[in-house]
Picture 1 (tube, rainbow, N blue to C red):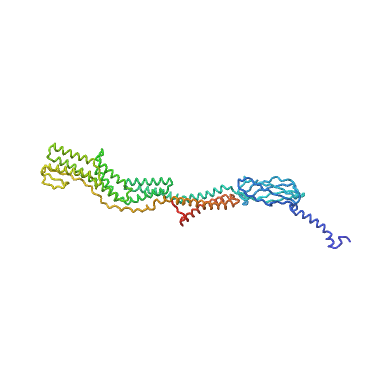
Picture 2 (cartoon, rainbow, N blue to C red):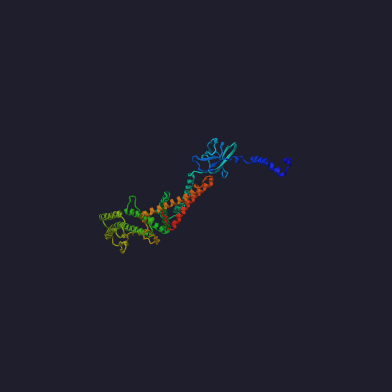
Length: 513
């Protein structure tokens, strides 16, 4: 009985070694080579590197250890692909050539160099392949590598500062620039009103132009408070005179009439007329400074009284000549009287205006005219009437000896009803205090400066740390990263302005110019 004629179980036991050998050979073909020959490992098993564009190359050391001798060591580096697949870098990482053979139990040192010269910001993944032979069987070791690269610190910092600067410019414009532009427009509009308003005194119009030019000059020099003060003065002056145009028209008519009553001749005589014209100019030039037209009316009435005084003396002196011509005196007698009349005329020509309550020269000349008038009238032929100017009663007229004395024209006093004086606010108590407390102003500005620096520093540093320092791939999304940092800088200044405004409302600071 042969072996094949035995029972099935006997045949299966006899064939078992053959089946096992076949299975072993088949498994060898199915199992990967590196599973059989994976005798090497890396320490660390993966590599993570972070850097900044423009940094010098960095070096890392990998230790490869093998349980069996390895030979034919070859190192390959794959391309590095950014995590968003938007960029691929070649040559980012290089490995120094390794030894060809490593004994079992001895580490293989791999020096890895990472260069950021030609890189772009972002997170990149790549692989270092270590190929070798272990006992004649080829094998490989994969070492994952992650490299994160971000932009250098200065561009993000400048972007943050740019955001703060933009917000500061806006805050400055809202705090001062807008006021400056608004004041410039108001100055322009007020100048147009001055040009369009007729009937203003020339002196007032000149003063308005001077104030507006001064306001514009202060505005160009960025002296907003001074410019505003000049504008307010001009606006108040124009507002006041817009309500005085009709009363001023009546006053101006009387001023012009007063000028026509006394006219200096080419030699500047009489001196009285020259002084009166100068006084009338002073009254008109005082118009911008006056706060009550009644004061101008009173000054003009005083000048009118002086004009009437001069006209009275001048007329009486001329009447003396008329009386002298009508007398029956001899030529020699008339000559003596004529000298006295000429002397009085010269005194009148050199007379200067005097106050109503103190006019000694006027009274002296007036008395001399009265005395000479009485003496001359005593030499009139009988029947000549006396002048009503001297208060005499006319007698029976004699046609051949009639004498008529001229009556001096009298300029009536003004009796217009003028507007009431403006009520002026009493600011004297508050004036001057800002200059008495210099340390308060220093403390105020010091607090405002410290508040600005602290808020901007804290808020800005928080954004810089969160958005740049803590972001290892800053710059990979250029638009998003930089725009966010710019917006953060903008909000830092906005936060400072908001805090300052709130602090001012609760009394923590006082915004004074």
